[in-house]
Image (cartoon, rainbow, N blue to C red; front, side):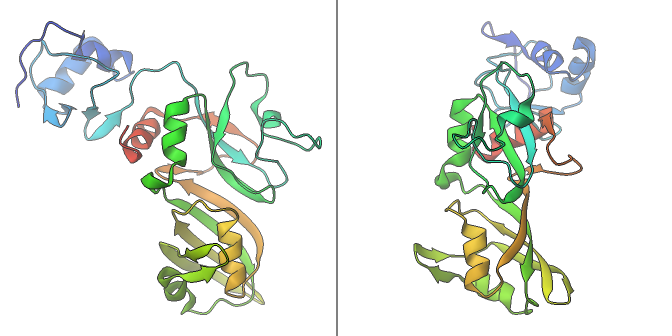
Amino acid sequence: MTEGPSDEGIRLQKVLAKAGLGSRRACEILMLEGRVEVDGEVVDQMGMRVDPLRAVIRVDGRRLPPPSEHAYLLVNKPRGVVTSMSDERGRADLNTLLGDRDDRLFHVGRLDTDTSGLLVMTNDGDLAHKLAHPSFEITKTYVALVEGRVADTLGARLQAGVDLDDGRAQVDRFQVKDVSGDRSLVELDLHMGRNRIVRRLLDHVGHPVIELTRTAFGPLHLGSLKSGRTRDLTRDELGALFDSVEA
């Protein structure tokens, strides 16, 4: 689709350049090559203006997040750190991981004190609310070291669902990664956000959790980020996160 000029908003190539996609001229070439979409339509001519806060802009299919003064962090929470910004019992909390930041951040969802892994922290309340809301069914991936030798049939059972004391629960995917002695390493995906759901599920089927780590949250992956460290989300990660909640 070829879009003509508009008198409102900011020129599209300027929006792209400010997002770090190259010089103004380089961004114009991206448009001429048909690699830029606005609200689902390819824009391959100069002159289009957009509202960057409202338009859904993609380059090579990847969502460009809207410009924002908000902070978006990925945190690898260590085991033993409380998922709280201040703990009344004096235990290590998330503030101990943030250093001297002066912006007020809050976490999206929770991890048990004994569970390590990926947390999202932000001061974007609207996005945080959507990410935590069950209607968007954000998938989380966990790796668990459990007691016992896990049977090959357990995955089908957990995907079919089991009845817990607060209702039926199930996983989206289950894989046995390793079995050694009387312990097994498993990986599972689920989108439920109920309290201690992974531990309760595995305990219910006879495999109490020894160690538990969340390795992915929606499109975000822990990767090589070391325990106790934080980093800003990349442009592509943030765009994918906005896509996951249709923001």
